[in-house]
Length: 169
Image (cartoon, rainbow, N blue to C red; front, side, top):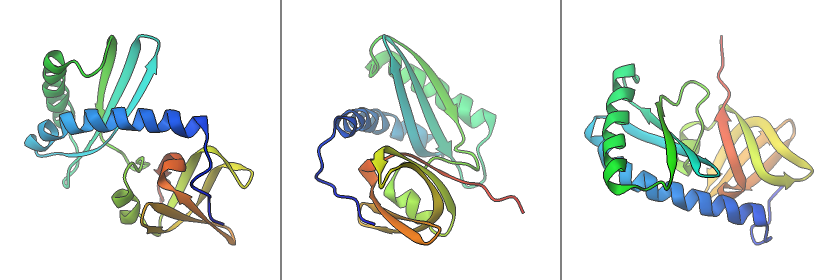
């Protein structure tokens, strides 16, 4: 099944606006995270009234320590004191992506082809708003998810959140 990309929807517009805000913040903090020998895995920004929550996910090849999270939090906090990228009160959290990591960018999806993913969509597609299945592939800005005998082709912008489902063997 292929999703039509040009179908207008208010949910997509609000997600697009939030993603562009997150992209601005990521651009601001990426040099700080990189300078601390970490990779910026992604961010989540939630705003309720005048209060915001910014979650920063960092990764390292040899694993993320609590000290890494503390160092990134201190440096980003100082940067935000000067730049003020978030209006009003905000809470800053820094974390490892964990085993059930959220996939933010198309390159991250490509790294996890063959793994099981839990995908939440911005709006229902084929009567479903949530899919759990095998990440079958990536084509351009589209993600292919195999659920039972059906393959869904989803534009990245339609995905609200996708997480890797950890395997415990």
